[in-house]
Amino acid sequence: MTNSEKFLDLYNKIDAFLKKETEYDVYVTFSQKIKTSTNKVVKIYSDELISLGELRNAIVHNPKIGNKAIAEPHDSTVERIEELFNMVSDPKKVIPEFQFEVLGANEDDFINGILIEMKKKSFSQFPVFNEDGLVKELISTNTISRWLSSKMEERGTIIIDNVVVSDFLAEIEFKKNYKFISRATSIYEAYDLFLNQVNLNKRNLDVLFITHSGKINERLLGLITIEDIASLV
Image 1 (cartoon, rainbow, N blue to C red):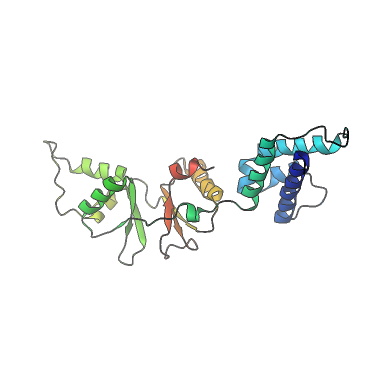
Image 2 (cartoon, rainbow, N blue to C red):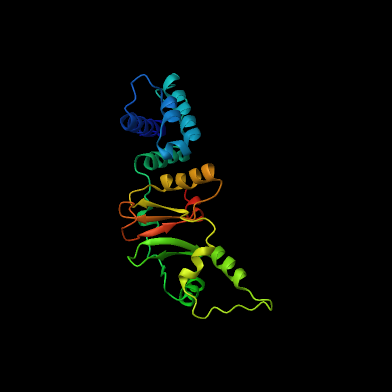
């Protein structure tokens, strides 16, 4: 197959997927499908997809010379439209991308142990579990800093003997600043949740907790921060 034939095949696959996903009428153009699609990947790459649609029109609507298309796409262009087709039709999911054992602490645990683990494993926040093992809150290094500041004596000394995790809960700046998502959530849908939070509340979500079906009473499979996911989308 020539590059133009490969390109048109992939273009038609994207077009067919969009048509099936939203059941567009046959007269709706590719560009209109892109602009009105609710598909998260399509929304992110809409300008690029529309440009590729214009290349398709140049290939199809111009006469061939020697039975060859006038507009013959580069190898990189064919590779890119194939990549976009894969992302649109089967986007990467948050699991297994962000699957790992989530380290947290119970309300009555002494803080010393979790602080040591935070330093050892270089993470900046951890969930607090209630007596049923469910997420009650999220404590970050900012929370810890505020607590330390509130406990500092005139000489600048701080005593943290017998301090438990629940002592830090009052210092959380934004309560319940997290959401739960299912393992089947795409990385693009997850990223969109972070963006929506910024647009609506003018601040980031702290984390997205991942469970099997996005319910709070399920075992944690992993978590995502905005820093984790931004580089992937």
